[in-house]
Length: 309
Image (cartoon, rainbow, N blue to C red; front, side, top):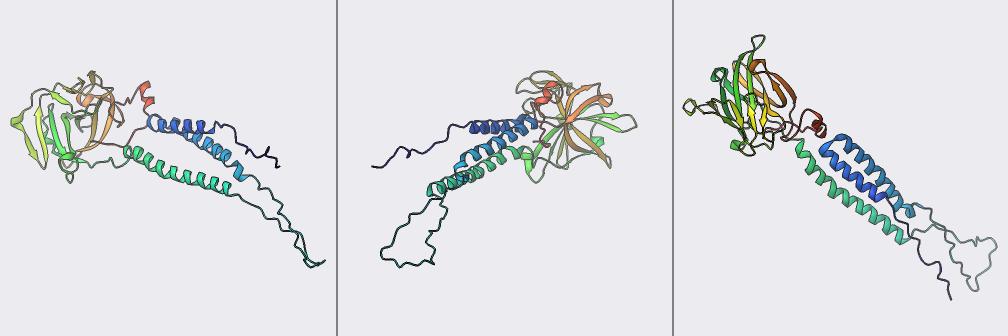
């Protein structure tokens, strides 16, 4: 009768490494949204606990393989040879079970990487790539009467067609210090959720003109409003009421050969003063609903590339 008291295999105890790995991955994904610091901490946790988890799982595979004494059988009527080596060779063995365990772990890791990496790429990269648009030439500065807003509608990418149509509210402020032309150019998207902002004032449709694909319409705007959620801005783009979290975004601009050329967008915290004498709290462009100043700005440290869509 054989003794079966030692036939039960030894099973490893429960491990906390998978839990730590999961927490690290969660922190990494959360950090991609709110903070690079949180993302870095999550990456360190995921790598550390992932390594410890893999090390714990593969411990039995990495252990030294015991040498098993092969069975020696006597051959009947074998000729006796005192010079022959009768010691059987000892070869290390690697069980099929351990081979399958290692193969399964490696295959699972490869499949996980193949599935996870593209998903993360499609989720994160679109916010940071392919968002730049070319500069827009709005025409001669004589098309913009001093002290009056003009609704300028243009195609940011003529090859893309109407889908790239953008609108800006342009006001000629006259000359600033140093006899340089001054313009206030407000982007027409609400900084709450990106809805189109409308000027509060009559539009002079009779004075409408279109030059080189740019449509210009003068408007007597004393303020601007978002019809979607009740956001209200004054003539400088400062928030007056409603859910917007900052002032309206503005365009940089340049004057080339007497023509007004739009540059990139930038975010505005607050504007003090008016027209050419305005003092603008300028920040890198950020998405609607994002604070750019104050304590709240620390919750939104990642600013994607400029987009004017």
